[in-house]
Image (cartoon, rainbow, N blue to C red; front, side, top):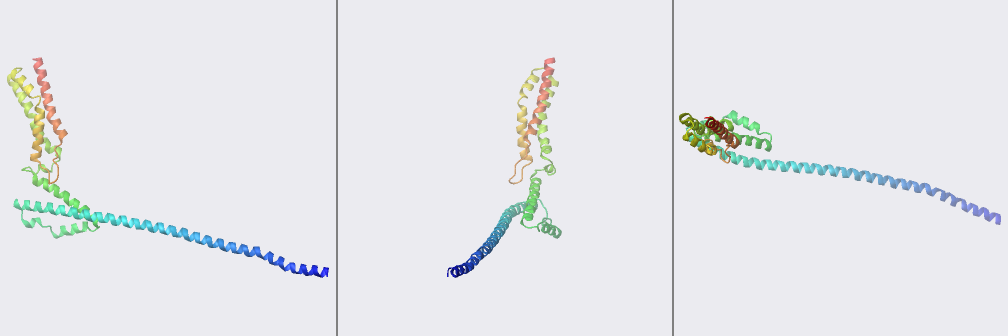
Length: 251
């Protein structure tokens, strides 16, 4: 019985060992399945994050473009109002000067060209309106030139020179005339002393004259070229005064 029992025990133990030997394989299979599912979820999550970031970038770009377009539209509306006001004022002034109304109406080719230049959207419209405002400013400067329409189109430093230079040469010319007439007498000395502050007076007169002769367009500033005016008024007076002083000392 002992031998039979041993065989029975061994017989019962054998299936047990077989079952215990099959468990590691099934566990590895389950672990591999779970690892594969985890990897798939990780890849899907990474792709989702990338797509979300891309979508957020597109949304931000669209919002920025929409904001810029809205700002361009608002600026174009304001510019259009300003240009219309300027053109209405110019039209009234031109009619007062006898310009026929038919000349103030744009021709069909001009309208077509203007429409073509503004076909690019709000930004193109804004650029065209700003260009029109610049031309209106130039027209205002020409209309505002009192008796000097040609000079109004000159560069500021050239046209202002026509105002500063005569005033700067006036006092030195008087000083030279007195010196030639009286020599080194009291009149020449008095003229020399009195001429010392005259450059400042000439500059002030030229500063006022430029503002009167070349007024700015509406909302603009007078371009007086202050440094040029001061230099032009000072140099002749200094040169003439130094020459007269040396001549008196030599005499």
